[in-house]
Length: 173
Length: 288
Image (cartoon, rainbow over all chains, first blue to last red; front, side):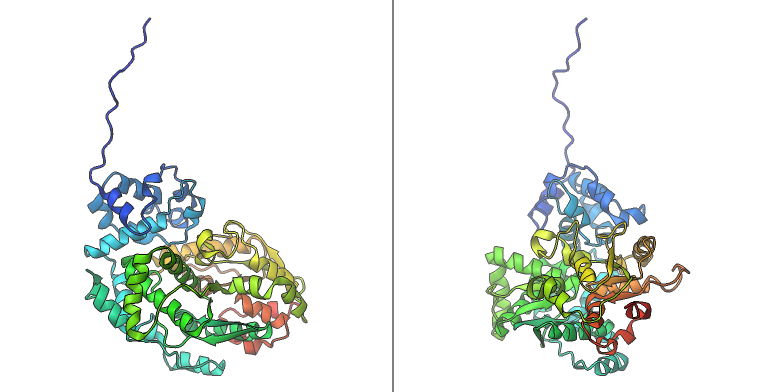
């Protein structure tokens, strides 16, 4: 009996776009091609542990498969807590946090940005710091009682330069 | 005497001023001089960081350059701030193009980043600049029969090669200080896991579930308290014990590390702002 040997080359599974290459060129995105899809990231992830919506391995798989529009318009890259537990455990030196940050940066450039992020960005670029609206007489009194300076002395001018140079109306151009 | 410039970040001065106060009094007692940075800006963590690496680098770069102009290393007491400043320092030191871009925007106010200052998180100052032996020698009022769970904070310890604070998989600085003041450090499931705080903006239900899971893991080891080293972690591990969905079991007090250390080295609790803690750590204070 002769064994049938298939001499044809296997059909390669081609990504539907060059999205992974695009991510590779962003700051922090360089490790994506090293991903072997082992799933250590999902196994380590507390967000994945608590909700079925989020699976970091699958999200990286979507990027590798070239699903650009689907990934950029999704909330998933914004659900990473950036806790870097997966990164610490990844055997292939892939940094999912940095990869999803690269995805966020591209998504933001194309106008996909969750409202809560947009609002916080607008606040920082307006006030120079995060909690200007929360800093009331009560907090000032607490600080004075503790012997701390109630005048926090935040710089408000520098963020105007940042906004002018890197953002237009809060969204990066 | 070693001197640092304290970068408080946005959150500590408003939401947890007692932490800021405790850092000042405890470090002073242990021989560290602090000057608070003024005219600073937000480091840009999480929000600016997510949408523009260059803008984020400029915001952290300015803080680093301010410290350079004072010729002082930076002390950061918030995980997000210390992580951001260290990341950007790493990027600026290794990427000339980015450094030139940042210096171009800093030049207008006469600032320049050259990379001469270090960024240290509070835990590093305790280990590297004060040391466990000096902490032990300073203890005048040790705790007794006290089981304490350390929570390190993700951005404080990871990624290890950039932040260089502690072993990221098995951090021990807080545990060793708990020991130094007479307490018993307890291990628990998921010790290096996140508090859930960074997810609150996108999904508070899941973020709180992550925080509560941590609380229950700590409760399972019969800990009397939780010791933190990041403002966000402290607030998150406190607030998840209140409100809808919180356990009806007794609350476990959270204390920042300097608040735990202070009473043991002879600082009265009022000077440490402990009266402002949302869950009273009275039982801890009485465990002598």
